[in-house]
Length: 299
Image (cartoon, rainbow, N blue to C red; front, top):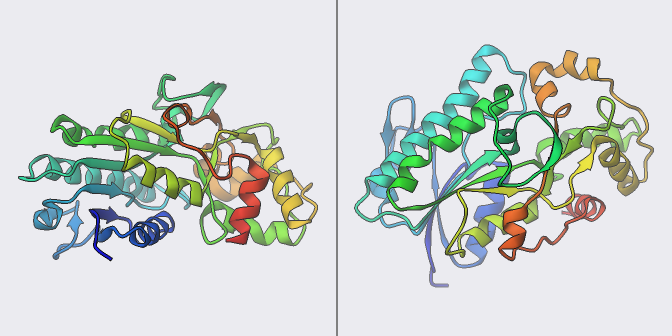
């Protein structure tokens, strides 16, 4: 099969990166993994400023997924790694892309719904005011700002603000499954807080869809159109697994186990919708939670 496009992919070994690479390859694109924290050919190291400019020359698109995992206890050292990996790595990549002789047409960079803060009692779209509330707000603000050199150089640049990615093979859902399968699952905290989610397959489809769009806004909410409460999520997962899901984890226990990470993620309250993607014609395969969970577990 003749390659259609050459696409640079950072974070190619992660949960989302593997799925994106697999789908792009199936479509006939040439996927070039671009490693982070690497001083040799085919990668970059934000700590040293090294980057392989030659590999980036002439690519059709760059999809930037790399970053220190969020799902860990946020010690001071961990928070610095999380922030630096997104801010410094993205800036190094964006500045390099801006200075290439043959620039890519598209630069897609991940971000998060934390750009809207931690708690907002409203339905949020791409036109809603953003916030730097909390650590995730600080991180996502720096993350998105770091893409500006690429945009200023005329590269179509979009940040994908993701919510909880549902996949049985990794991420939050995989961590929840053992307890739920044993019948020990339930809502976290009081259960009324809203969570914004997307099935991995739909996130991959959205990323690939972006590559074919001539006009994209600076940011897209990469979430499903039906955010839900923690209680509704627990109930839906229990139903799919045919297990009870009535044992709540109180907020104090979440804070004790996970600290600030738990406070801002599972106890956070954000109702985010993908208004821009829907308006531009993107259609989700699994827009509702029960179908998304069933499909994710089947995959």
